[in-house]
Amino acid sequence: MSRLDEVFALVSVDSSSGHEAALASEVEGRLRRAYALDVERVGDNVVARTRGGGGRRLLVAGHLDTVPGDVTRARRLDDRVRGVGACDMKGSLAIMIELALDSGPRSSEVTWVFYAREEIARADSGLMEIFRRRPELLAADAAVVAEPTGGVVEAGCQGTMRVVVELRGTRAHTARPSTGRNALHRLGVLLARVASYESRTAVIDGVTYHEQLQAVRAHAGIADNVVPDSASCTLNYRVAPDHSRDDAVAALRDVLGDTVDPEDEVRVVDWAPPAPPNLSDPLLQRLVSVSQAPVRAKVGWTDVATFAEWGVPSANFGAGNPELAHHHDEFVTSDELDEFARVLERWLA
Image 1 (cartoon, helix red, strand yellow):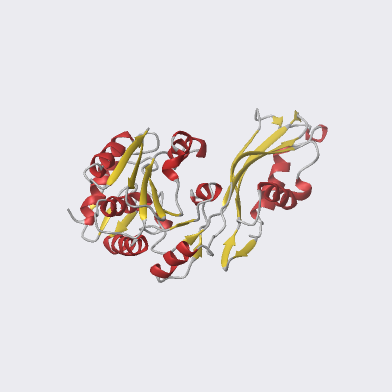
Image 2 (cartoon, one colour):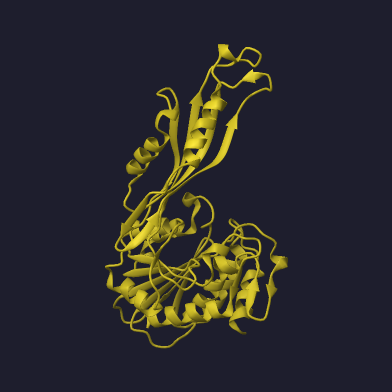
């Protein structure tokens, strides 16, 4: 089959988060045909490792799951495949399978990781499941996380913090609002402050990261004739790699300033750390050189941060336009697949 046909076959299998078993079985079955690979199934995750004479080991990781969508709407067109997960990231998975089955000689040992549940809470990630059960399978000198990057190496990643802010007020009758304090009105002032946030820029190893702060949820009120005595919102803060969790909390409090009183609550409910670019690593330098394109920052969070925690230098590099990820009409083109295959094969060789 052509590369587009391979992608279409993967896109046609429903593998929304938590439902990866069928696709994991398909990938496992394909990889077990290669005599040079040791293939292991860990839950709904598949790991295939070459077993040569040792030396350095490179790792390529891609997630099996997609956001929810109707796989029956997938289409194989002349130069692209359109459908849920085509860009994020079944195009890259198809190339990973193709190269894993290539028995040609390479100077490095290679580990191929196909893991479940990347698109949901990090605690549920299949990559974390492998690490808990079989951490030795993830040992490597450097790694590529095959998120869609448009054929450009995207270095490091920004952290993501989810914060709930709860503002206090005093309940009153709406006919006599002066006897109370409207928490919802207070929340409006806070949201205006967030809306006017000016992105902080951090330049690390020559790569520029732009932090982002957005309000994503809000709640207040118990009845239409009651002044609300509490109001809350959820903020999502994208944090550059030069900030720790404590740095991020302090910076957020500076932004909110006097919109938050001492009796209010600012509570971090989720934190995924950022990852530095690691561009001083010679193996990642080689990846950049082979790609023949300037490096840019990864604006979202990816498992590059997970590998960084484990001491494995890594970068994002994959087929597809990252701006199409999670769109209902996402697609990947044959040219994008060819370029990803070219660069990845040269890096591994």
